[in-house]
Image 1 (cartoon, rainbow, N blue to C red):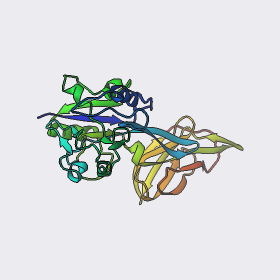
Image 2 (cartoon, helix red, strand yellow):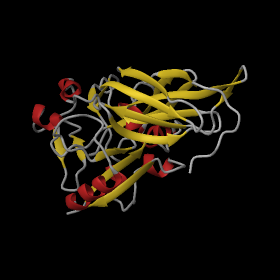
Image 3 (cartoon, helix red, strand yellow):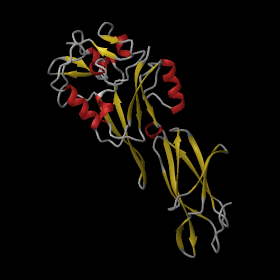
Image 4 (cartoon, one colour):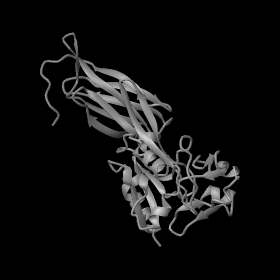
Length: 289
C-alpha cells in the first residue's frame, strides 16, 4: 500500500518557523487520543528548523535543516522498546500513549533525538505526522500546509515510487544507517558538504581590479572536477566537496595573462582562499571563445 513521506528542501527553507508554530497550534493544549497527548507549550519541538552556517567572511551561506521524527521503516525506537512503538501500514510511526507513560527510556531509544519527554504529563512524545488529520482525509500534515514556499512537501506513494523519486531528485537521509526514513532531504549538501570560495583579480597599472573575464577550475589529483566563469565581482565558489577530502588545486585563467594557481587542503570547514592575483599586465583583454 501507499505510505506517507516528507521531502525537506534546504534550498527553499528560509527559517520562518511556520512549521513549528503550526505544530504547536495543533498539539499544545490539545489531546488527540489514541494518537498522542497534548504537547508541552515551550520545551518540546516535534519539528525544528535548525540554522546551519558554512564558510567564513566574506563567503558564507546559511541554511535551515528541519529536524523531526524520521518515521523510519526500520525504526530504532521500535527495536529498543517493543510494544510501546507502533508502525502503521501507511508508514507512520506512533508511540502508544499508555505504554509511553512513565517510560523515559523511550527518549534514549531514538538515536536522532526525535522523542522528547513531557515532564508535565510524564510521557514520551514525538511527531505523529498529524495522523489524526490524515485519517480524517487531510492531504497533508499541518507543518506542510503551513510552509509558505513549500520547503516541506508530502508524498503518498509506494516504496518503489519513493525510491524512484529519491533517485531522481537526489534525496538523502539526514542520518547515516539502514533505518530507511520516510523523511528525506533535498540539497542536503548545504548541510553536510563543504565549498571552496575565493576571488580573482589582476594588476591594472597599479590598481587591483576584479578579473571579471576569468575562468576558475578546481582539480583533485590532477583531474578536473569543475570549471566556471567568475561572477561580476571576480568571485567563484566550488561546492559539494566532501569534508576532509584532501588537497585541491585551484587554477584561474584569463586571456593575455599567466595562470594563477593555489593549493588548498580541505578540512571540516568551508575555506575562503582570498583573492588570487593573476600574474601579468593588461592592455586589451580578449574574451574567451
